[in-house]
Length: 143
Image (cartoon, rainbow, N blue to C red; front, side, top):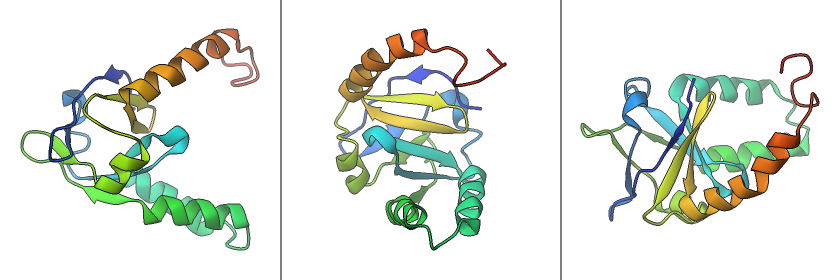
C-alpha cells in the first residue's frame, strides 16, 4: 500500500528520486503511464499485470475499453530504478503531466501518482472541501 505525500525534484535528465520508503517494493521494476487529471500513475509490475489481465478480459467490443486501453498501454513505460533510487520519466509523460522541476509524489493505495507541484496544489484545494463534506456515498457502511 502506498501512502503519503513526497516532494522530489526532477533533474535536468528527467530523473526523479522515488520516495525511499517505496524503493524496495519497486526494486523489481515499475510501470509509469498516463493517469487521470493529468498526473502520472506509477504501478509496481505485479499491479500493472493485474490491470492488464482485467483489461484483457473486458469486452473489446466496448469502445470505452478500447479507448482506455490504447492510451494506457501506448503511453506506458517500464522502468527500473538506478542505484540511487531514481527513475527516468520519459519526455512524453513529462509533457502530459506538465512536469518541470518541482513535483509531488503521492501514495494512492496500489499506485503512486506523480504530479506537477502547482497542479497538485490546485487539485487538492478543489477537493479538500468536497472530501470533508462527503458522506456515506463513497464507502457505505465503512466510514
